[in-house]
Image (cartoon, rainbow, N blue to C red; front, side):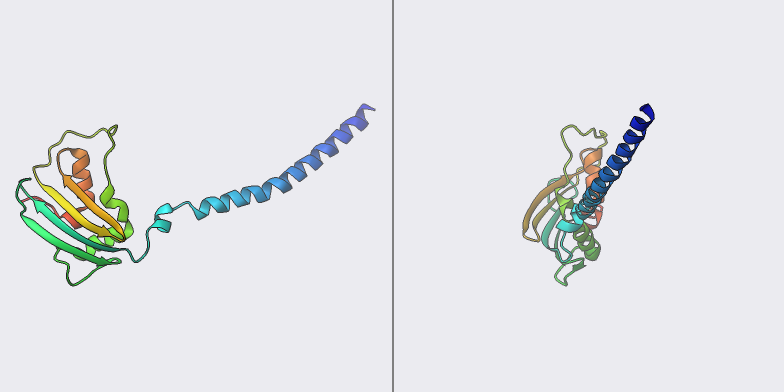
Length: 159
């Protein structure tokens, strides 16, 4: 009797495992495919033909405007009206990551207290349909890092 019971339990266990596997496999495949569809939100939200029309003002001393540039992009290429040195590099940077100008440090982020100089930059205009009005400086390590990540747009900013 015990042998029959064990045999019956073994068959039930095999059937349960098979039916659970049959049910679980499509579910897992669906979840994996759904994850793949949204795994790179930047690609989905950054149109290939992002346009930009920006005015960039650079101040070496943080007070007076030393350089003023215009940047107009059609996708990753600058238009002829652009006056920014390395305009094509700046357009390529913005086409790959249009949110880059909105990079901010959080209040909880630890930044080195390294002073990068008095240089400041102001960027105003539009990327796609979104208005842009951002100020940049080099007051600490985090701000210097953001400035450096925008080098094609802001230049060296230093004399």
